[in-house]
Image 1 (cartoon, helix red, strand yellow):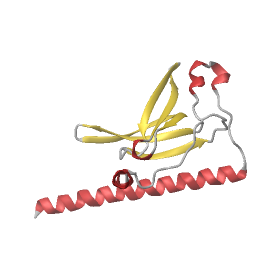
Image 2: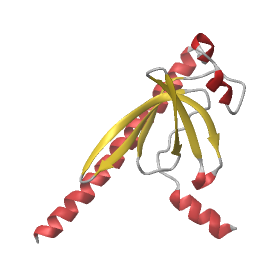
Image 3: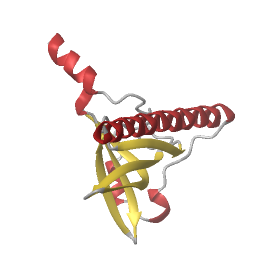
Length: 152
């Protein structure tokens, strides 16, 4: 069992953000189309977190042109650049599947308010930006080294 835990620890993404169920988040997801890369932003409410360790996933739900769209993201995916918290949610359940059936104002999740919470979210988002910047710098450095090795 220690071997499995060791392998899962290697697969954990450094700088993974901590957010809760009910939070409204922006997931910056890297899309690769042929040779081009772009970052797609997916904003919605976190419905659930499932599993644990390297297999952990989270589901984000948003409304797109009046239709509910859900997407499941692997928590430790290298394609997730960062996750920003837009609004912290105040919920008392671990899974918010009941939001699928709600219409209009009932669909809203209450927001946590307060100076401590605002400061904590600002700090969390700053850490996410720093982790994303360091990850991007490492990728650029790696590409630069490959480019210089090809020229030699």
